[in-house]
Each structure stands twice: as C-alpha cells, then as structure tokens.
Image (cartoon, rainbow, N blue to C red; front, side, top):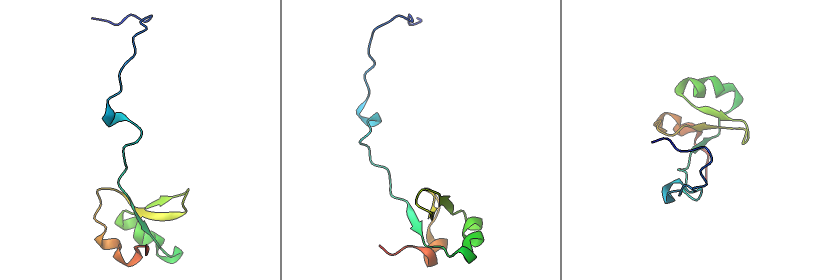
Length: 71
C-alpha cells in the first residue's frame, strides 16, 4: 500500500530515537605536535572543534595510554 502524498498523519517517534539519548564518552588525547603522525597511524582522529586528538569509539585505547588526558 502506498501512502498518499497529501496524508496528514503524524508519525510517532519512538523513545529510543529521542534527542535525550546519551552518547558514549570519547577518550581525549594530549598528543604533542611532534607525535601527531604516530597517533594518527594508531587510529587517532582529530577533532577540529576541540583542537584535540581522540580515540574513536570501538578502537582499543590501550596503545594511546601515554597520551590520555588527565581528568
């Protein structure tokens, strides 16, 4: 069945799709400029907004332990 283009029905949004779902925290790194290429080779990503390197979700943070920012 095709939905008519002029339908005025509202689609309910499930609670799991709401904007108040929490995003997992990322691991921020303190990488000196001289070591940026090494961090990048390990898989670190640059966050231009924060101007910091970080470990992407799903990547083991252990190889980055020397650069983990103190909380």
